[in-house]
Image 1: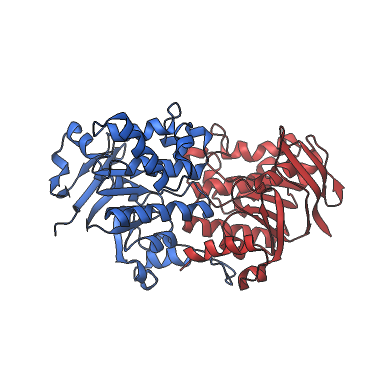
Image 2: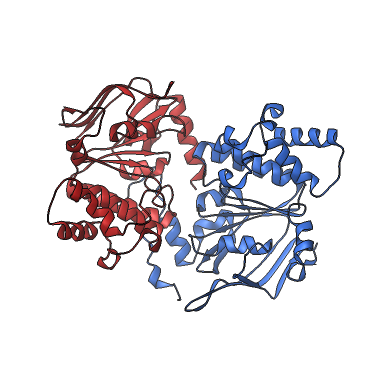
Length: 246
Length: 277
C-alpha cells in the first residue's frame, strides 16, 4: 500500500514558485530520502506535506486520503515531523512532560502520564528527564525529545528534516540507530530530507535527487552504494561526498 | 626555524557553584607554517583552545599556560591594547556562522575595508582595489556589485567567503578557522575549504582548523590533534588517521556512516570507559 503520494506538487512562497511538478510514491514501511543542496526545495516539500507551506497546488495523499490545505487533525495523527535543529524546535519554557503531553491534550486522548513515560522509554530517555527544560538537556537528548514528541500520537509516517545535521558525529550515530530501531519496531514510514549521502546509505531504501525545485532522479539505495546514479548532477553530489570520506 | 606558535600546558578554567571546572586541561603543541586540525566532540575544549590563543576567553573564564608564545611574542603578558594590534593583523579567526559574525548594517565592502584600515592607513583608491582583488581571490566573480551588498543579501556560502576575505586581507601569519563550514551544505563546504586551503598555501600561513568532522579535517590538514574532555588524546599525521590507536579516536571514526554502508547498527561511543570526571 502507498503511504504517501505526491502528484504534480507546485509549492510557492508568495510570487516565487519553489517546486515544479514534484511527484512521488512512497510505500508503507519504506524509508525514502530527498537529497539536494540548499535551495533545491527539498525542505519545502516536507513543509507542504506537514501543512507549514499552505500555498500549493497538486495533490498530497496520505494512506489513500487527500490532504486539505488547512489544519487537519486526522492528518496529524498519521503524519508527524521532526525538525533539524533541536535547539530551536522545542519550546524553551515548557518541560519535556508539557511538550510531549500537549499533543494528547489537543487530540483529547487520556492516560497521558502513562503514554508520556512509554514514549520516553522507547526513545531511550530516562524518567528523570521528564520534568526538565530543554536548556538542561544536551543536543542529543533534545533530539530524542523532538522524536518522542512526533511519536506521541502513534503516527504511521515521520517526516524528518535533516534530523542529525546539527549533532556531533558520535551523537549522530546514536540518533540514527534510534530512528532505525523505531522504524523496525513501529513499522514507520520515513520521508527524510538531508544532504548527507552516507546517512541516506545507512537509513534509507530509496532516494530522490532534487535540483532547483525538480526531481532529477529517483534511485534505489543499492545504486547509490554501487555509485551507479545516472544523472550527471547526482554523480556530482556523490563525488563531493566521496571526496571527503577516507 | 622558530615555530610560529608554541603552547605548553594550556588550561582554561571556569568557576561554577561546585568549584572550578577545567574545560582545557594541560594542552601543549607547537605549530609551524603548516595546517593543523583540532577535532573533538562538542564540549571537548577545542574551540576554547582556539580562543585562548587570541585571548578571547571572557571572564569569568581564566586562561593559564606555562608558555603561550606566538612568533616569539609572549601572549600571556600582552595587554588588551597590545592584543588588538595582533588580532587581525597577525592572527585572525574565521567563526562558524556568517549570519552572526557579519555586521548587518554595513555593506560588505565597508566591512572588509575596515579590517584593513584598522591596522594600516592607506589611500581610498588603494583600499578599494585591494578589497576588490581580495573578493576576487575568494572566487566572487563580480566584486564591485558584491561589495555594495549587505550581509542579508548574500547566501551562506558567499557570506562565509566574505568572512574569509575579511580575515585574510591584513595578511596574517596564522589563521584559526573554528568550524568554518558547519553552517554550509556539502557542495559549498568543499568550495570554501578549497579557497582557505589555496590561500593558506600561497601565502605560506599557518592554519588551525577546528572541526568535529574527522573526514573533513583529515583531507585538509597535515597534522591532527584529537581532543576529549579538555585533553589531547591523540596526535597523528592526517594520512595516518585510520591507524589511530586511542579508543576514543577509533570510536569516532567508526561512528561515521559510509557511502557504501552495510552495517545494520552504528557503533556508539562508550563514554564511561575513558572519561575521567
